[in-house]
Length: 120
Image 1 (cartoon, rainbow, N blue to C red):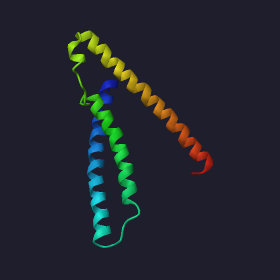
Image 2 (image 1 turned 90 degrees about the horizontal axis):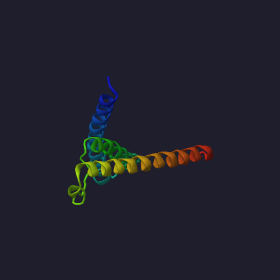
Image 3 (image 1 turned 90 degrees about the vertical axis):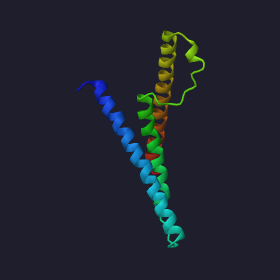
Image 4 (image 1 turned 60 degrees about the vertical axis):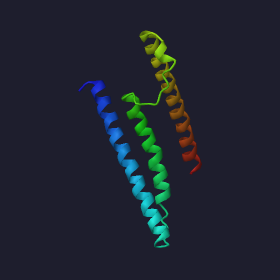
């Protein structure tokens, strides 16, 4: 299996997983509302799990929409450029996304390591 085929399968799986996570958020919130309003017995997990799922669903869906080029874009400027210049601008945008992602992963790792060190 080639690398691009593997990437396609992973991004498609991330899109499906993201959709199921968003669906489960609806179920969790509905369950929480019923338990709180009908039975006067709120849960201690539904709100936090819904937030956790929402964060991960957005990241997983981001990989899917980036791979399939379904991001929202204003192409008023880029549509007037030559094809080659537009492609270069697309590559630059992908480079900016990659740099931002690497910085976010690096800084997030530092925060996690600090949290582990202080016992949070």
